[in-house]
Length: 289
Length: 271
View 1 (tube, each protein chain N blue to C red):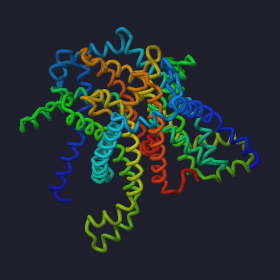
View 2: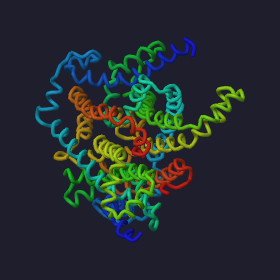
View 3: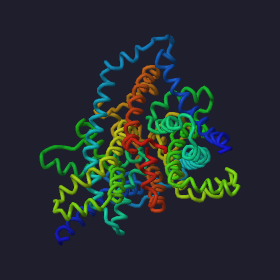
View 4: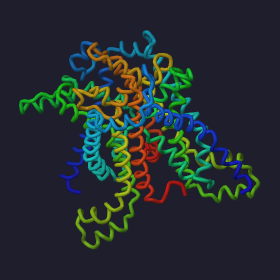
């Protein structure tokens, strides 16, 4: 069409703003990562930070801890979300209300969720009371602020509470958009419930579930607010994740160069995961057709 | 269904509902309990309204945060929408060089961890003298909000048939008139969802707010971090719980209103 050339200019405001806030900072990150910026003596050090990074036990530990956290969260959230979706798939007022309740925490600010859990896990909050009485039967005491295993478990529980709703919603959408004819024909052929799930429903769920798992994986790699409020990364370093270490390095210890170098590697990993996720979402067709 | 399985279902659903209601109730309960009651556990509140008076009035610390949060999130929402509507239209309607790569680049901005951007922003914003201003924080939020809104709008636009555009051009509509008279009314649900998620991001974000502001433009989540971060100082849980509850109210209220479209927004907007 004649005026197409003009129309591409409609993209200009979005492009200009995003270039300023999206590209400019990445170049400053690259710039910072190659020198010792904002230090007493500013010198060019090349790729030294990138070499040090892979031997820094705090980086390696934070990455391993973060991946463990992501794996445990996904292993709990996906079956739970899918199960809840099966339970609540039929329409009805009660089901709609409970679905909305499950989705609700995903709309809350992470920092408020951290605060809620901080209030609840004190020894006289609801979670503290319940866990203490259950563990009291075995002679244990629930203390997420001193015991690192309890802290990690509490952080996982908090993430499950926060994000199961998202997986639930995606599963619910996938279930309601499912082609029923396969299931009906499988049922007339005399397939068991498990066989119906395994051979007709699961293949239709695999793409949405892969998409949402990658989405959650990226989110769990970014987790910071609620964990920082609840445990502050402690006790010790037992709940310190990548974001928190970079923040400590860059914002608190003013070691901008090293923090930038870690950020760049971290960003690269997230972009690769994002590409995988979009491939899963669009089944490899590409986003805009 | 047998009676037993119905009973089992009711029990499971009651537990699920309780798990999601109790934390919200407990936060509210703490916010209306006096300090002594909070130290005892505050599962049953003693209806003390001092914390709510403090956050809405008092020294004005919390009130400034609430006002900043409302202003910043609303401006962000409007700005992101105005910038993204034409961009979403271009992405779905016109083929141009490297359009898919450009779209992917927009999305990776959304997926990027905030900490990656926060460090350069801190330096650049200080250099430009927009650190701790409302405008600076809004500009920083654009890095995530523009991609979210573009993607939501583009995904809704993609299902509006292109033949409508062609018919309008044949009838002699200009691009602008086509957009205002035909596309915008069709896009109304998309605009609602995009507005909600653009607003939600600015409302819930704590990371940028805690790094890029200190006094003037500090939002409610960043204030919560400051209030709860005083380890060993005897944290004032009451006002924090009240302020935290304020951050929950819009989500709870709007959930019912946009329930129909929320799934779409969740899957796309959260990305």
